[in-house]
Image (cartoon, rainbow, N blue to C red; front, side):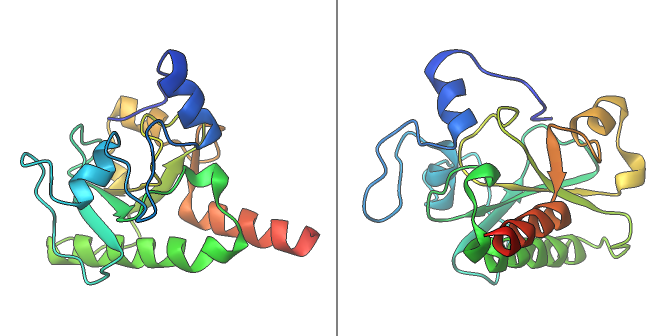
Amino acid sequence: MAGPEAAGGAAAAAAAEGSEAGNVGGDGYDGKCVFCRIARREEPGTALLPCEDEDLVCFRDIKPGAPHHYLVVPVKHMGNCKTLKTEHIPLVKRMMEVGKAVLQNNNFSDLNDVRMGFHWPPFCSIAHLHLHVLAPASQLGFLSRIYYRLNSYWFITAEQLIERLQTENAAS
């Protein structure tokens, strides 16, 4: 479970600020970012799941916190959820739709028992935007209930993020 651990040194600072640790090229690729490499199929140990959105990829979390634990990631390198603006709301919604579709494709149909969200900096271990999709939420283990806790300062649901982004737009 990629939980609320804060890595040391420059990597933690980069994750906290949403900046990239590597050098992102004009094509949105950071060769030092594991999620960028996964999205380009450069990590042979990570199988991509079928995804109907060409700008997103989905794969299983390497430390699953639930029987179904997937990550939905933009192919193009983006900072963490704290760096998002109002114009990113459609992206977050598409990420949620991909997460729901992957669950359904993997024979999970109770979409009322799902937790989808993001770790809020500095509690994200990878500084590339990624949506956690966990199901069934009712079967989260003890540590997972902490790591993916609702209304905590380290985890924000996708719906809460959208609401925050809409509120920021209304305030400006």
